[in-house]
Image (cartoon, rainbow, N blue to C red; front, side, top):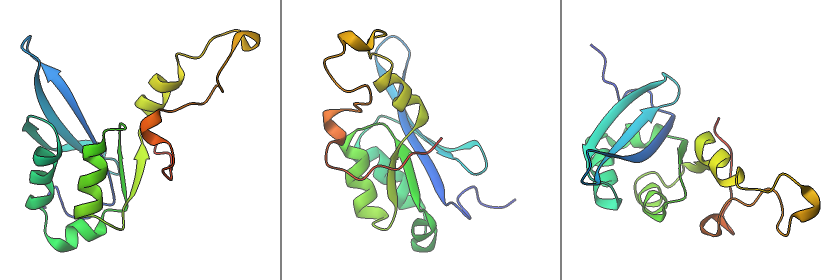
Length: 128
């Protein structure tokens, strides 16, 4: 059986809560093959770093795009482990960030497409 980490080029990462105690799990998906490839209890820089530690240097070098929300811990891990990869907001978070815009354009006080203060000044590409 081939490794789930072979040929990775575009991955997504997100954390989600389960159980009532706000227990979190971090999940990494392969966007090319449309499947989850790694999951671990917890979230944050240290947990996402565990994922990159399981990859070989060649597998890390093959990753070109990492999609996720605007969490800074994702940025710091990508910068450390995959310095040539682009960071991209994922489709779910783009919709959630922009869906709060008012329906009536005359009442708008901010531009319709404001992602977040966390993304200000960063180069963004879109992964859908």
